[in-house]
Image (cartoon, rainbow, N blue to C red; front, side):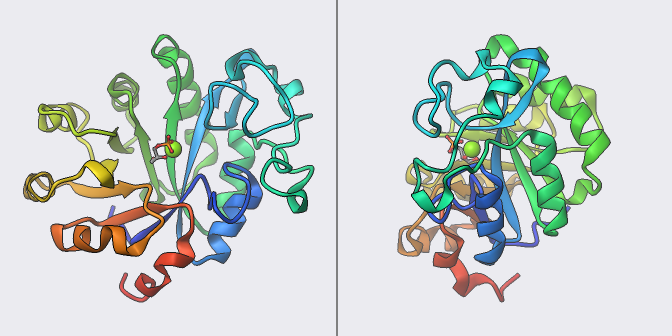
Amino acid sequence: MELKTKVIGHRGAALLAPENTLASIRAAANAGASWVEIDVYAIAEGGLIIFHDDQLDRCTDGQGITKEARPTDIAQLDAGSHFSADFAGERIPTLLEALECIQSLGLSLNLEIKHDTADVEVIVPAVMAMLRDHWHDNDKLMISSFNLAALQLCYDIGDQRHLAPLYEIIPEDWAEQLASVKAYSLNCDYLNLTQAHAKAIKAAGYRLLCYTANDAEAVADHWQWGMDAVITDDPTRFAFLSNQD
Ligand code: G3P
Ligand code: MG
């Protein structure tokens, strides 16, 4: 897989529409992104939803612990009003709804797996089964996670996925960690990336993606260092890159 874009919409396009909703995915497409990053979360009764937080409170009109919610409860929640009244009634998508929306828009997907460590063996097989049945082009799919155990289970399950360990701070043994899952890329917080890191990551043959940059000036140096793509809440701020794919 070649990364055919330099701009990936974060949680869809979280500055343009309520994060991790179908509206946000559409906003990313309208803003010129050809990839979107979204978070997948396991809930009660085997449900898989697109959501970032452990608690429902910040992004919905509901309350409580996300993983304890039932799909029927989640389906009732308003996930748009917290962003603006224009998005009142926007729902939390299921993973299946998001996969269908993203493919219908012709977008590529960076799916980030969110979970408690204890739940890796629940969410990973369920996500992989859903992708196997409902995602049609593995060249347009990258799976990322802050939890290496989740990616190692993805790797063990197989299916030729492109895997991307996520780091807020790049650990000393990053090379061993990436090798353990035959990683495609290293995805990290641009604030903590050094030129030396970037040089070593690129020399080792990996793609280098950085989150979450909403100011093109802030990552101006990073392109020179070898950054392949930026994950941003507002793809319009990087529109000047759109003809450089
Ligand atoms: O995948 C990049 C970024 O989404 C990781 O952090 O907390 O926004 O999911 P977070
Ligand atoms: Mg994420």
